[in-house]
Length: 303
Image 1 (cartoon, helix red, strand yellow):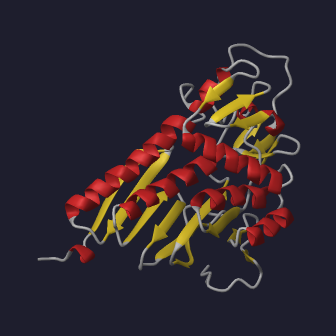
Image 2 (tube, rainbow, N blue to C red; image 1 turned 30 degrees about the horizontal axis):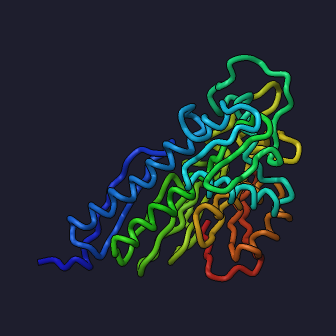
């Protein structure tokens, strides 16, 4: 009989606008399936509570709330908004989750507006976190937690696998991945010049990785090409031509840091050091690769 330590169980389901792949080993099949179900439950909760596409989510409830109305949100929503405020502060305003109206105008989010409003758009300063998982908006704000919510979902799914006593596992949500245990995973990246080409950029032995790129999300707005990357300082949408991958301790921070690096490489590099993270940058305009920090050991690039 095959020992439980040699069994790998794998399941995949559509969530978060992508396919979430969950693998676990070190358990018998029954316990492995149970752990995977709990992992998917975590992902489903994040999708339900933090979707910027679902008006019934916590973000939709906050958007419909009156000025200065306190809204009780799911504890996880509260945690992700709190993390977003921290990254906003550390990035000097580059990272901003109050740009949902900009993404709506650009066609990247569905319209929630009942009518045009003349009021100024809210900013991160209008997002107030109160005790007891309560959020209060001083002005109406359309929040978009985007990639950090997806990264948070991956982190919670991994926690569910670990709590199920798995010895190794991996959760991959469309490029946001985190793994644990004694087995390495290849770091596979799309070539931003030719997205159909997959590059092996080394291996990950433990931790998380997240990638931001614009090759599947470009569209024309007026006379410009834009992607759903918004500079929080001036609320402008940018055309992300490169591929930015960050390796960090958690998937949420990895995903958030990709956005900062994509907007301002210098500021992003400072935050990599603060979060003990690394980055792989693939150029979309020419065939080059760059590692941050520059003397980045442990990552092998094969292009």
